[in-house]
Length: 302
Image 1: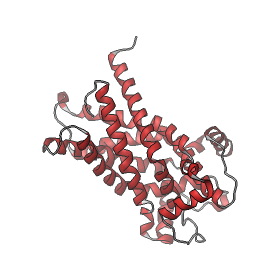
Image 2: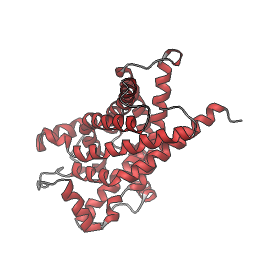
Image 3: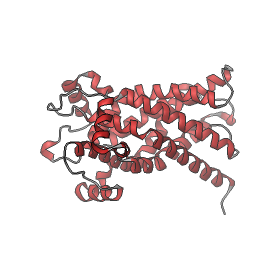
């Protein structure tokens, strides 16, 4: 027999999944642009400078508007696991460290809780994230006149397992986890704390204005902290399809060092503005939707 606690948990899972799907669909073209920018310049032969406008123009010219959504399916699949786990884990851990459910943890405590929640979620969702990155990189191969590696999610999963083993689904999991810790440390803790400050200082009530301010601040914080790890994660995941003789990076640290040595320190923030441009709207759409859905469902504010 399902208890009230089980029902509440399932409701939160449904609401987070729905909100994440809406946010991911709305901002996916920006995420695709960010991934292409991060992969640009991996080899010394790729020295032609590029920017977000050029990347989008090339996608539209080669593939049309549908090309901006290459890899959307695995991105949504990822968030069906990733977002519910991290959001619900954060909320439960936050409530656990507060005595008698009264008050709020300090910002450092929230940051640690956010990071841990992100790590747990990312380990589970890493295979879907890997497929998303590979399918997004396929679009760049098509621009070069090459055939895409995968025809869809199932084809990608099957080929990865056959070529790289079951463990291949977790290629790049270490930089992925590092990024997840940083981005959730910035995103969840900052959103939670910023909203608390906005409400306590009577800048706004617990409404869409407060949620917008909090999500904007958390997006900037999360992007600044996570962008270097995101660049390393993207490159480590993408190189796993190459022949051993063509592999550029031995591990995350080697990728970090070579990226800085070849392209300069600024390369660690490649795709920063597309990332910020995505995280800001993504969090706005997600948090406003999620908070509204919770209100309609009769749940307390996050």
